[in-house]
Image 1 (tube, rainbow, N blue to C red):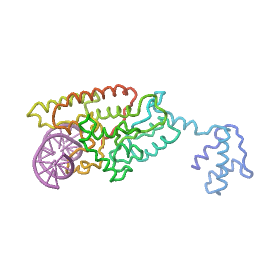
Image 2: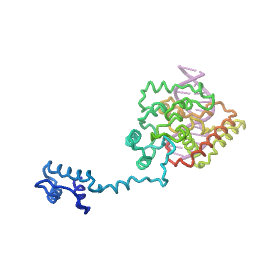
Image 3: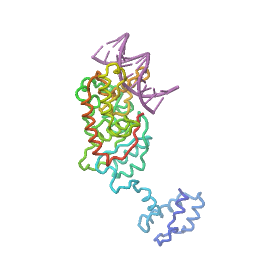
Image 4: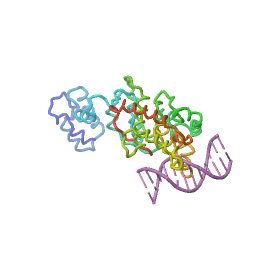
Length: 327
DNA sequence: TCTTACGTAAGA
DNA sequence: TCTTACGTAAGA
């Protein structure tokens, strides 16, 4: 640090200044002291104070100001903030350090989206700590701040109680949350709140739609995000249920129900804990259709698909692509 | 009825 | 070859 300070003396910028050297310590002397780092502490402090006062009084722009401004320039070409219509931001996450960044941006006055963007890493696998309320309320991560017993109590959502009612299931039970509760967010995803009042579109819609895309993309895998999966799956389901002998083929997840849209295992349900021997998918990711006996669920799937397609159309123009990780 | 565990299909 | 997870049988 000392070296950089030395190089950034007011003199190097060639402007006049009202800097008044302390008696017995003119500026050249201070330059010398810069070269010789083992000077007494008070002299150094005095020198730094004089620099600070110089820039503080507005005698000259801070030498690094231009550089800082350049570094802080948004990387997005659009003049509007990337999520200007929404209160939430969805991101994959990487290191815990990002959480610090998130909290700062959420709580602080500085809520510009570009600041998030530049610091945003890619996603990280399962079971990362979620410090926000979302973690405790919407997703039952084993590392959340909810205690183990309470966590298990929350997990005791009987699939039958809400499952056959309309594609809700455990995921549907979580939709009641008013914060980000429009959709149950897996722990691999960060929702960044910008605190400005949204211009109409609800967070719930945004997150739901975003996950719709993610789920569709993930489910289709190599088939691109054409969104034809649900109908395809419906066909598969219908075929498998109607074709008799071929019904032995494994059914596939519908990809559009709430559990299917959940991307990350909870890590605490019996299926997750029993993964080695149970060979079962997380209970909160178990497809609503697969929970049912093989039967005709074609129109249900088609209906869901239609709605999801509408969501995708609504947001496709303003939701950038991001990276989702499934464990 | 629910849970657990195993066989194995399917995809990466 | 490895991983994921569906189907199903057995046990609680």
